Image (cartoon, rainbow, N blue to C red):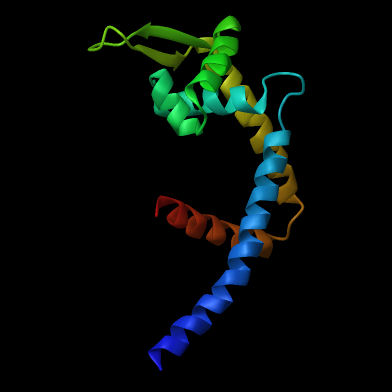
Length: 149
């Protein structure tokens, strides 16, 4: 009897999982597109965002966070360094390593992109009814809980 309940619950969760995943993916893509045009690539902005959120990382840690191979991250970091958005400093305990961190200019560029994405989403949310916004506020709390595991 318990087996049937679990199977039924699982069957109901699967279509929701697909619909929710698709909606999150599409919304995330749309939010990413709401950025200053012709500026950073998505990969560069993602790396800059990771450094902004983490504070500082080794190149290997940044590659792991971004889920790319170290040679790919080397190219991304190189472009960010050329623009003065990221700086390298010696690792405090390992002379073979460096630490990457966003520069003041990098933090300003990150803030500009963050503001553009937030403004786009706020405009879209303004088009919803108060009830729909309240539902999304509840959903956001639930999604944050799911993301934390």
